Length: 174
Image (spheres, rainbow, N blue to C red):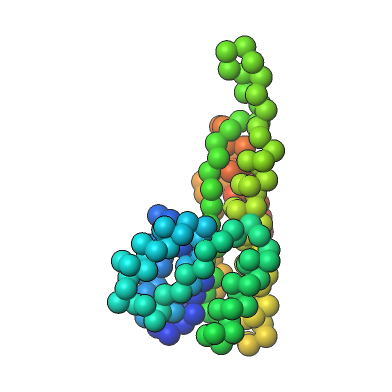
């Protein structure tokens, strides 16, 4: 797909993989919305890619919050008229086994960490895909939705929530 003048949303756009995706899209003249909860990282993106100031839009917030995702998708669509590319890349890794035994004490995986991981890594993929696919259909836009997963999707020792969330991304993508 040629990306010149195409409109793209990249969740997790201030992170390692996300910032490289943003860079590649900008270098190929796409209009890019970088979405992340890291305001410092988004500010760094703006500074580093200041030559693309008219083509880089940053949204700071929680991608696990459906209202935030709806607002981002609606705002970007309203301002640019279409969305051609979605890269669902946002992810967190809060390592923990389901239950562990350390120095004679049992420790259960935190429900708070479970919920936060699934919201960021899986629910955000559903939320963004739902919003962007709707807009693509309304405008009859040819586009692409890319979901970033992990080799850990098949299970990885000590990564209960992360592995489950990435397996969910794979299942949602099929």
